[in-house]
Structure formats: C-alpha cells, structure tokens
Image (cartoon, rainbow, N blue to C red; front, side, top):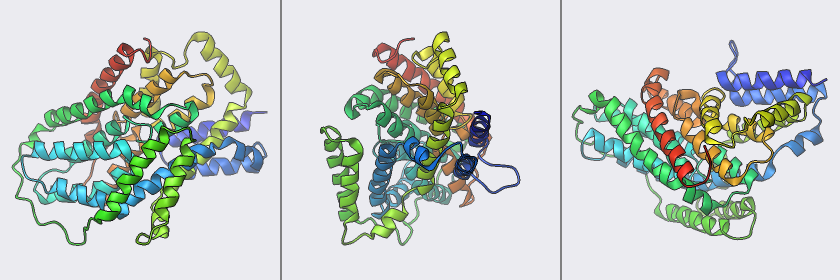
Length: 410
C-alpha cells in the first residue's frame, strides 16, 4: 500500500507550508529529514532507491556555486557593498535605489540566499544609524534579490534545479529573463518608494564612519570575478554544467590565503540537505499509484503548467504556500515532459511570485530572521504591504514578455 508514503508526503509539504511544528524547534530542513528517516524506517524507501532519487548533478552545481559565493563573502565583498550602500550620501530614495541595485546585481550572478544572509544585518544597522526606518530598505533588499536572481540560471536554487532538469541553455535563459528581471527591479523601487513614502520622507543624518574590521581583500575579490567569468565561458562549452562549476570550486579551494575549511563552512549545508531530502520524499510520492493517477487527470484536463493561464496562478499559490523551492521540486516530480519555454516561464514566475508574501521564498525568511537578530523587525504585514502589489505588477510584466516573445502561450 502507498498510504504511508502519501501520508509522509502530505505531512512533509504541510511542514514546508507552516515552516515548523508546534511545540518543537524544528525547521523545514529538519521536517524533510525526519520524513526521510520515516520512509527508511518503514522500508518504503531503501538506501539504494534513496540514492537514485537524489539529483546529484544539481546538488554538485549548487555546492560549487556556493563555494564561488563564499569566495566573495570571505573577501569582504558583501560586507563592503552593504556598508557603503547604507552609508552613502543622498536622499532616502537614493539610498533605497542603491540597496536595490546592489542586491539585484549580486543576486543575478550569485545565490540570492547568500546575498541576503550577508547583507541584511549590515544594511539594517547602517540605515538605522542614519536615523531611518530600516523596513523599506530591507524590503528593497529582498525584493531586489528575488527579482535580480530571476535573470539567470544561477541566481537562485529553483532556477539551478530547473536548468539542470531541463538542460536549459544559460544564454538563452538570460535572453528570456533579463528584461523582465530588470523591469522588476524598477517596479520594486517604485512600489516601495510609494507605499513607504512617509518613512522615506525623513531626512537622514550624515553618514557615519565605516565600522572598523570591514576590509575588502581586493585580490581575492578579483579572483572571484575571474572565477565567474570563466564559469560563464564553461557554461557555453560542451561540458556538463556541474563539472565546469566543480572545476572552478576546486581551483578556488586551492588557495594560499583563504582557508578551505572556512570556504566549505560557508556553504549552506541546510539548503543542500533540504534539497536532498525533498528529492527523496517527492521521488517516493512520484512512484505511487496516486501520483500516476494525478498525472493522468492533470494531463486529461490540460492542467499542466504549459500555458500562462495555468502557470501564473499555480506559481503564485504554490510559492506562497509551501515556498518556491519545494513547489518547483514537486511540480518537476510529476511533470515529465516540459518544453524549454515552459520551464523558463516556471523559473521566472515562481521566483517573482516569491515576493508576494513573507513565506514565498527562503530569501524572505532569511532577511526577516537576520534583521530580527539586530533588532529590526520585519513583520508578515510589513512584507505583504509592498510585496503583494509589486509581485502582481512584476508578474504581469513577465507574463506579457513571455507571451510576446513566444516562450509561452496563453
């Protein structure tokens, strides 16, 4: 009977939606890991079957890109950018624009989760020292990180997964998604500047001296830039994407200045474990009779997200209930014949949909938690106040672009 597998699957994705279990200090990664343990203990999934369910190339690519991001983090790039942005001169709206440009630009070529993790506390503290409310700037940071990451196949975890599963071309994807991503950055600024105009009408105090201890290691930063450049060239070569990325990661780890232990320690192992566990849970569900019947019914009714009319509400609902990474993993587990245009639309729309509510993406939760650690509270209502309108506008732009460009039909 598949009943046990189905129950574990449903409970796991309920855990993804709520993010915790009442009375327990367990997060999404912990919930997914417990689900895998339950499947192993029940005998419904064997160790060999578990291994075959995990998409190793995707995990290798994600790991390698995290090593590249660690190069920038340990070189002080994130700290330096965040500090200089927060202490920049000009009006509050100019400061907001600087935050958005920095976060969006970095997230297009590096993992948006890491960018948010590194920049949030420094932006929050720096803005507060200027006598300003940090909330609109934190919203600008995460909104831009999500929007900017939509431009490339390496900007966020769900894009990496979609690119690997569909074998999407890096440059074709950039052509399809760069314009709506850039337009979304403009919308993020305009929406926050209007909705939070009372907070942005305050006059900031003069920028204070940069905090001691924040040092940019220029040579290490240059190495990181060179690594990204070579990585882009390798993506255009007839070499598996994960192999090229691992080559770059290996070269960066062989450093005389930066400790490999520190670089490997900077990898988001929680996210990698979450991916691995969800691969197992969704793989087990995909093998059940219920999943096969579900796929047949969806196919008969034309409800697979192959058109914009289906993709838009599905992306918005799924991303803001279970999160965009688990949502994409679930969709790909049962959608076996997607074409490149539909996969491009799934990547772009699921990423932009993550700006709708606080629970929409991991980056949102990271910003809220990191901001709270330095005394800057970003509530669910604060997020929704700007997130809902800017998401609706950016998704409308993306839909028009995908339709006019011929990537997807209505």
